Image (cartoon, rainbow, N blue to C red; front, side, top):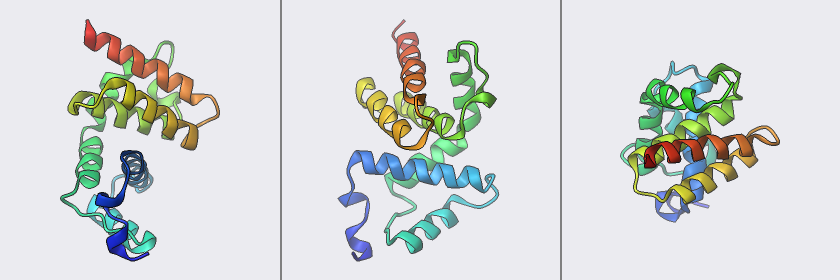
Length: 145
């Protein structure tokens, strides 16, 4: 496939969320010591992608990365008898992404939660999807009140 064929225009929303997750995960792996631009460049060259630095995937990943402390502060009170440090990395990153999307986008909460569950099933511990579902459900209930 050529680079033009694998771009944001050709991806499903689920694929876009997966790429956002991978970018955020890569940045965490680099301990945020490299730029997101360089990570996107590596992805583009390594996976025949054509992600733009002004596209939705980049801007969403950048927002989640830049707001990670604020997002963690939102997540922490939702964790009944858990500390954020005890949660697996992938689960934590999916929670950050999902809380960000629930806060910043007009996507229905049921869609965001379902997509988070699917990402969790792919990348987190065996039953972590139940945990993610519970945390996001608590967040949505709190927002309704």
